[in-house]
Image (cartoon, rainbow, N blue to C red):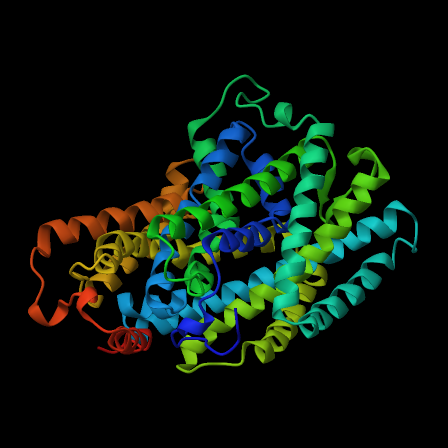
Length: 474
């Protein structure tokens, strides 16, 4: 994968990747310690949820990322450029700006987690005075955030993939040592489970998992060889995300249940005594830190796609990783030393992230299944008018807000559910149902000017259409 294109279509010479390699990218993207606070919140807020079902179902919904990977493969453009074809250029700039800001938020969260893990290591072995360890950890974390991009994109991708595989091995070893099957039992400790808490746990896992990645789904599939089948293009990213996201989330819940992760007003810490041996503890912390730093680089690298759509031209993504790192450092420092609580900041961030991401995901799923797949197979494109998609998105966003519960507000829907936040599930379901109903009830025909057969077009013409779509034209 290269640096030449942001919103313009990839060339045939650049399409050298494969679907299994994309699965490794998603495994590496999800197999990081950024899921630790998500798992802790699930265990804290929803103790009556069957954790194993929460992990399995939330990870299975990574299929949304697999589905939305298909347009990137078909058209050769990133997700936010595909989104312009669905919502139009003006509205899509707002969506892309929201996506860029959410990535800044994740980068800040990751920076804070690196600081907390480093502080845990310093405190566990008394390497520094307790009152200075967090400041030394911050200096090292910020240094790593700015130095890692110098290594280069390809090296980071390779390092993160290798690191994710090692972290997966440590995670499995820790799960075996701590009897993770008991901590993740399908029957909660009180021998009963609550349906709303189960949905709340799945929703929270989606906020920090699959639905936080859908807006980047096509960014990597656009480099896959054209001889790959559409089925493989959907299944491999889904499998990579399912494996990585499920394993790290299971580990996070297990560590919290067994006391391996301590939480409080001072943040989050990993305790060496509860992980058994120093090898498991230091190995996990080392690869967690390296994976988080690499993840932050890839987050900022990918966020430049969204920023490129906002400004309307290709950007040098390497340069913008420095800008993102700088902004994330300011936000992360605020979360560490100024915000009333890391946990309140994190919960608020997750809810703000999902307000647009969840309903947008529902619209895009139906767009891919209803429009892109027939077109890719040589059929007719019957895409909805962009105005209809915008109204469906607006409806889904309003519903998502009403079912959200966070430190800033409690929506009326969440109030009816006794405070349980199921906004991601409700948001995506609303736009899926609304998109289908509109197509069935109000859009039985397609104008002649909106129809074309891909099989009859040369690649040059397809590229022209794609580029125009990326800029919201046509």
